[in-house]
Image (cartoon, rainbow, N blue to C red):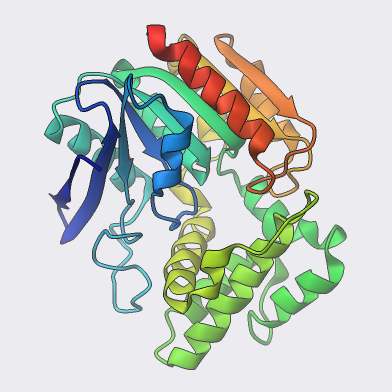
Length: 310
């Protein structure tokens, strides 16, 4: 990075940001997944460093932002989708940016859509892959209905949520465990949650477990934030993003999605594209959600190259 810092925000949050690429280039905000994954320098592989000014932000409670959501004493009441949207606006103002491109994946595609619909005047284009829209149906699929695909793994996932855990409300059950005062309870819950995460993305040939899931601190942060958001329907109204598409229908976009993405089935991206006349949808046959992303990455890189004229 050629620039970095911590942006202070209400509620005691300090958000870590960094920039790579051309300091005077066209700005791009990378919107990371999770929630809770934190930003990664690997996002730079999608953007031309001579043309783009790539901005990475660790969302509240994740990465190098503080306080760490993995700490059970960290209050999550000010960690919601509306808060994250306003964080993006605060960062844009802080960096003196008028309009920027959005580049998002997985949860980051959902959050990018929510931000763009709230502030469409600030957006040049959107390039999104591994599409999600944060609906109750998507959350229920990934935490309950997907038992039909991975029955043995799901039964372990359900059992680890504790006796009597409602199979239709596992994010809430795990969120309670991850806030337990007993460190072992939190450790076991985070590991079980991340084991399930690594299961449902493993649908492409050559999948290997996510290396960061072997780190207890990362597991704690990731699991606590995912369960917090999913237990609260991602802090979105029912079908909010689909119903709000008229606000951004004029914005150019490229959507890339893997045919083997069981975590977020293809109908999510298909239904979004059907309401977005300015978007182009690409289905990559051999790609899954976050694994075997070469085909997805090629489309994303080509899209960012195409949008250099905007």
